[in-house]
Length: 166
Image 1 (cartoon, rainbow, N blue to C red):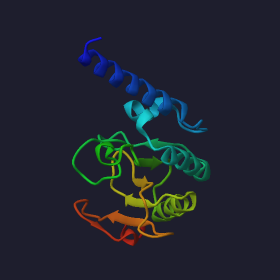
Image 2 (image 1 turned 45 degrees about the vertical axis):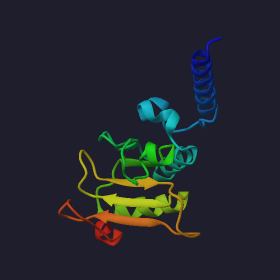
Image 3 (image 1 turned 30 degrees about the vertical axis):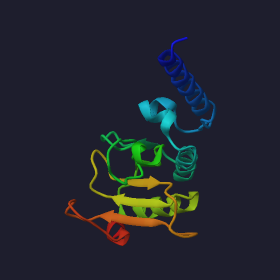
């Protein structure tokens, strides 16, 4: 067999094995369907998927994945936890919990996100079509650390999470 054909076959076999592993390692989720994650399903962190399902269970109402471009995965040169190119998997999701309309609701959502083990939490009260939160499974700086932030009222800047919870 020609050397270039061997290389191509090896690459194809590697891709098939990788995708087979990813398919087999997908968790059975109670509240989310693979189709909700679109083309990112096989590339989502297993830990993220399990925590999303646990968040939905604790929230007690539907949780919509953001329809915004980049709300799940993206491929760019950023350090975003959404960035497949940087991390080799999608480690973040932007979500819109149904009924998260007040500051008390946002505080509850953040408390639930912490309780299920997310290590990155951002509050976005002015997202459209609904307010939402960013959740991720980044490697914490130290045991128990959770990175938190909030979009400020102007929508153009970020600040302490407390400003999005007021």
